[in-house]
Image (tube, rainbow over all chains, first blue to last red; front, top):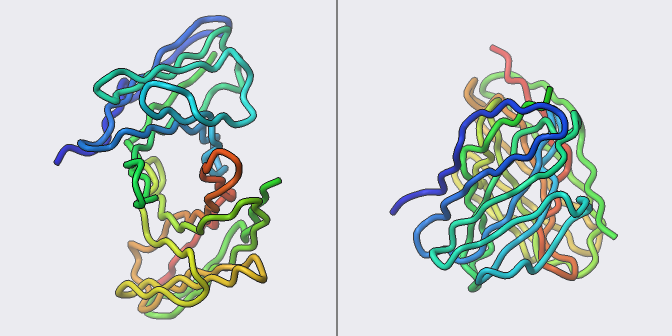
Amino acid sequence: ETGVTQSPTHLIKTRGQQVTLRCSSQSGHNTVSWYQQALGQGPQFIFQYYREEENGRGNFPPRFSGLQFPNYSSELNVNALELDDSALYLCASRTSGGELEQFFGPGTRLTVL
Amino acid sequence: GQNIDQPTEMTATEGAIVQINCTYQTSGFNGLFWYQQHAGEAPTFLSYNVLDGLEEKGRFSSFLSRSKGYSYLLLKELQMKDSASYLCASYGGATNKLIFGTGTLLAVQP
C-alpha cells in the first residue's frame, strides 16, 4: 500500500508568482484535504476534495484553488503569492466511509521571497 | 464556530507520565483526534475519540468528555523520542473538517 506523497519537497518563489503543489493520495482514498502550516502553528484547513469536487473550504482567499483528478490525486494552486504564504503545505487523504483518520503526506515547504 | 485550546509548551522527565489537555468548541462535533508531529515532519495519527471515555493504545491514552468539550492525551513511560509537538484536532462543522490547535511542544529531558 502506497502512502500519501507530495511534490516538490521544497520550493522557493518570489512575491506575485504562482505555484502548483501536487499530492498523490493513499491507495483506496478518495478524499483529499489540504492544509497550510506556518512555523509554530497547527495546520490550517484550506479545502477538501471528494470525487473531483470541492466540498469544504476554510478561511482562505480565492487565489488558493485546487483540483482533484479521476485517480484522486490533487493539486493546490496559489496565485499572486504573498510573503505570508511561506509555510509547510500538507496534503492528507482518507476514505469517504466510516474511517475518519487522515493520513498526511510529508508536505511541501514553500518559501516566498 | 470552532476553537481549540491547548498549552503551548510542556516539559517532562524521561520515564515519567505527562498529560496534555485540550479544550474545544466545535459545532456539529464528530470526534477528537490527536496527532504527533516531529520537527520538519508530517503529523502522524495517535488516537481518535468520538464517545466519552478513555481509549488506550500502548503507552498512549486519550480521554474525551463531550459535555465539557475537553480531551487529554496521556503519555506513559516517556522516552526521549516522544519529544515532539502534539496536535489536538476536532472533527466536525458543516463540511466535516479537521480543525487543529496550535500544538503543544513537549520536551522530554533525561
